[in-house]
Image (cartoon, helix red, strand yellow):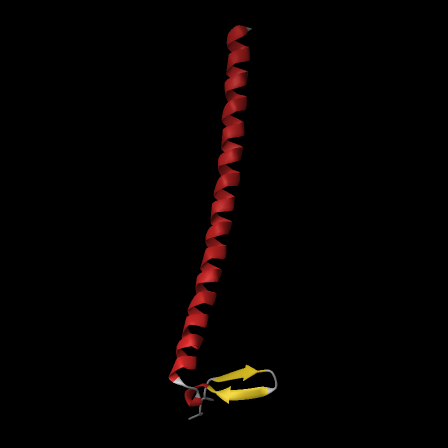
Length: 76
């Protein structure tokens, strides 16, 4: 059975064992991790929204061109 290393935090040249840190610092580490996860999620959501906007713009352009072509055929 292998032992797992305790989680650590490196600040500058110093490495700290997380379990030895104060509860306040542990809470801040937890909040920091949550904020990072939320930032990644927000970036993914922004990418999805950007792609949706691009898709809708292309569909609008296609619909307008098709309507113009129909108008030209109807007039001709």
